[in-house]
Amino acid sequence: MKIYNLILPAIVIGMLVGACKTDDVKPKVIPNTGSLVTLSVDNSSISESGGSAQISVTLSQVTNIDVTVKFAYAGTATLNTDYSSNLSITIPAGSVSNSSTLLANQDTLKEGNEIIKITIDSIINGIEDGNQSIEITIEDDDVPATANIILNEILYDPSNTALEGDANGDGVYAQAADEFIELINNSNAAIDLSGFKVFDAGGLSSGTPNHTIPSGTILQPKKALVIFGGGNPTGTFGGALVQKSTSGDLNLNNAGDILTIQDSSGYVVISYDITPLSDNPNESYTRSPDITGGFEQHSKVTTTKFSPGTKSDAAASPF
Image (cartoon, rainbow, N blue to C red; front, side, top):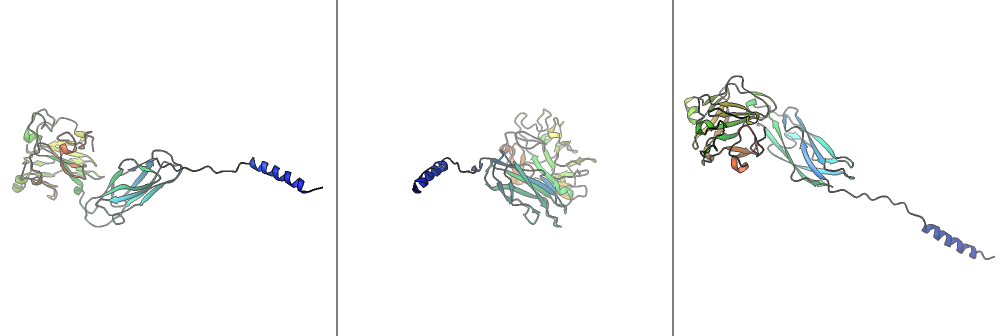
């Protein structure tokens, strides 16, 4: 009996059986790098004393791989000096969002409110949805609360073309009556403006205010106060407090004038020199962006010539 005759069939059978086996193959994990990333914050204004804000990153769709979002910080506030915050946030696979806490750092410096600007520096396994950015204001508690009163818009040269200059909405164009200033309470606390005084250069020199804010005027957080030269202000003005000059005229010249606002103790809260922007614009000057930006002619921001009590954007939304 030849043994090799038995071995050969066994080898053939083994080969045939082996050919029928299927190896266990793990499914490939394909990174989903097409999810769009957005950036948001739950509190745009925080106190220097223990204030905090939650920074969140959100995906447009669930991914099967971690997404890491790295931040860039700018603004007048300094990272690790005025505040602390993570340099990145990772959204775990299977989730659509994650967040981290930004904390303000207390100090005793009278530096005024400071701005934190946060943008997306880079993303691993995701795509930024346009240009994402947020701003957070750190409210300095070492200066008087009135330091949070911001001049946001000023109209000292209304258009004299028909009713284009009718800023107070009473249906009548009147140069002196349609002049206005718009003040914003850029804080989280109500501010009592009772007894504040508004002067032009001549009024300040003579000690005669063009407007004295009445007793009991409380400006709530993130709200506006609009003061017109006169007339009969008509409209909602974004829910702003609306007053008209107690002297009947703000008397703001188109050139060579200075607006000065003092609190009830005589402390200068705002000083605005009209001269650098005295080019007879026939429209207002407004901050762009509102509250934090520099002054621009209103028509360079949107198509209208003024926006008393509302943001300068075309939507004219309240603050």
